[in-house]
Image 1 (cartoon, rainbow, N blue to C red):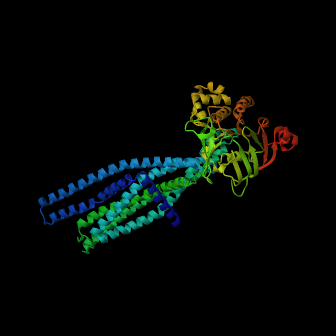
Image 2: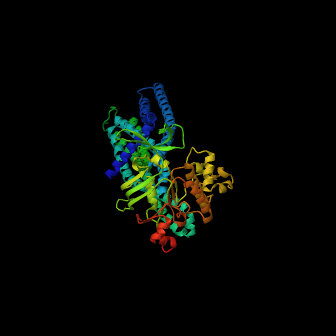
Image 3: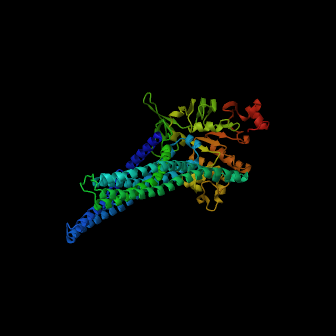
Length: 632
């Protein structure tokens, strides 16, 4: 419990430090206005005591009513002025609080998204998309509630309680102790009941993220669900997640809703005890212990009745904020957990630059050219070398494991010379896609070496490395925008003409021109207004416009029918000319013309050679090609 409380305090400190970084002047200004507002709202009891004292003196004949009126009028005017100042402070701080809250949430979302973009692929492979989305929705909303309402109200109530306590002790320590005893009971109840409520509110926040993850999966997989008549099972899975959320939310709100009536009744009991204690003190002439030196009288007791209600009321104001603060802190912890994820490391120092030839030597060009080279500073001797970008990729005895205890690739040695087409075939899980992920450095190898144009791939900056590679994934990813924008995604500086040329190369121009607005047709993010084949053609066009020296085609024609495949294949044949191409395909007809075919089995290369060579070997490729052995 202490460890958990320590963690909460760390989260609070980190959050306050972040807010202070965002608004180094605004936040202290808001706190100052809150303090002014809270202190002034605690002062009416002092004026009430003074007014009653003046009236009491008038009743006792010590002063005339004519003399009392100016004093009463002065006190009322001062109190009115203080109320005006309090109102002004309250209005201003509420306006500034809106700026602070929305501005901070905006900056937090920007910071989260910026950090998310720096995370490695491993994070997105292991985390549910719905859970990641929940950081930007539920967690940020819980944080908004805490920053905009709960924290200010907690600060106001705390300052008010301290101010009222000081005033009470000034007028009567005995009466103050009566109220403190009642407050102790209220805080004890708040801790017990509110603690249970807070625990379930934290569970609620986690189950919201879990439920959103289930919903996101179900929405994405609706076609599969309907095809396999899986509606009942999907509903059952959702019901389980929703039931967990319901039970946590029900218990959280049960305890939360029980707390207020209990505290309200405790406040009435405190009020009665103050009235009874005050009457006893006056009746038996008990000496008053105070810093004011005033004896027990109506002028002391009556303000205490008001202060007891105000004191208990502020305790009641604190209790409902605890739940919001706990939910906000739970959201903040989840946000900080995401922001604490290790960013993708990049120790590369070799960069990709435009070059031109001058006096027979390559030199760096500030203007865009069609010639690229690796800018390779040699750290050993301090020399600088420009290595022409050719697309020569070689693996030397590479081992790899997603998890340390389970190796996926074993001693992989292969090469792809510039202009060669290398095909990978093998059953699902053999390691084909994993090899291409290593070329992109989505994952780092465990052992061995990968060289690109005779440069260790670890020395190449990842952004430069990926700029030199084009990839068409098995699962096509399109973005909400026009057809032209989706093609241009491969190279943002590409002109409309270059995008159209890339579409023609991929065989996509024909169907694009038949769309309602041609290249300006808006696409949905999931590509639902296109067929799978058309989506794949756009992905190939996107890779073509990038014009990279190395192309990775991961089941690039898997979603295309045979006729469309022939159209695409012609375009890809043109696209692949002069490039190093790595092809992953289940259709062996698409890899027959490869310069080398590599057969993988459980992370091992078991055969390699051309189509004819592998058939002559009559090994596993021969069995695959003749249908004697199925890939799966």
